[in-house]
Length: 402
Ligand code: PMP
Image (cartoon, rainbow, N blue to C red):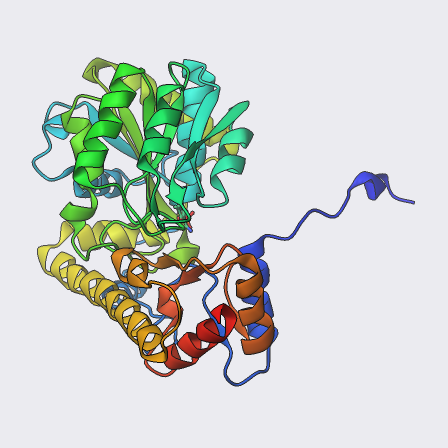
């Protein structure tokens, strides 16, 4: 007997399960469109050259030690990261009302930010889009948000944003609800609001006194341009909102397993920053005490050096351009096959993912018959496609649809 007999098997995490099934599948034509990680045109993971360069340099640097970092991490990292999000010339930074703290990638930022809002401001209601990244709800519930709500986002019929539904749902949200917004490259749909739509979202949130919590996991990855991908966050700051934003360097630096993130806070009163930092310190202290250094050092060094920074910007341009090319290639192949339906949404969507519109049955058909691994929602990671397999993918989709 064991006292652990009470522990029951939980459900699998879909995306990790599919990734494992892919790795174990011996089929020569298998394709992995599940997990959200960049792959090059040969289907291989890509360590950014600027990251390799930094790592080689760091390996020879005898002054780098493995001492503990401060609880809130490397200050130069957080400052550079906050400036990358809000813009070098951000008045909120200049006036000392905006600051960042180093966290465990995007997920850790969401967790620490949510806990601050729950424990110190007493917020309990939060809204996330349908659909959204499948971890959002769990992170907020675990942070103490007892009242999860959803807002409409995807109109399956038009394969577009359900903007009227979104606005209606936000209008009926209770005051002080936290609204989780994807800063760019909405996961999983790949559809972002237009600038006019963001303005309307801001209007409703202001009117209803809702609190914006941005999730920025793909800055630079959506358009290839860091400023363009930060437009929505900067717009909300300019409108005078107090807000928080979770930044992740998993995708845009390819530092998935290094857990490099930054939680940005923008508040109205700079004199409150020391108290906020002290309470964030206690939140982190009780959760994991302090963050790891390796990845944050890489990002801090790259962001601080003009030449390295430019090199990195070329990398994100290259990655986003490859994604855009593959979107076009997939659509072109489907048109060539005469696959019924309109496939324009594949090229209209941005970021790593496409919400193909394939049904669960069709998605399963691709897994079972073609060894093409994708989520049952029909979401595919576009980077899993390359010139050698895009035709195969289109044929499989054609077979599933026809
Ligand atoms: N938010 C969104 C929307 C994401 O897609 C991801 C990664 N899949 C994350 C946050 C967090 O990722 P990480 O913790 O690896 O930075």
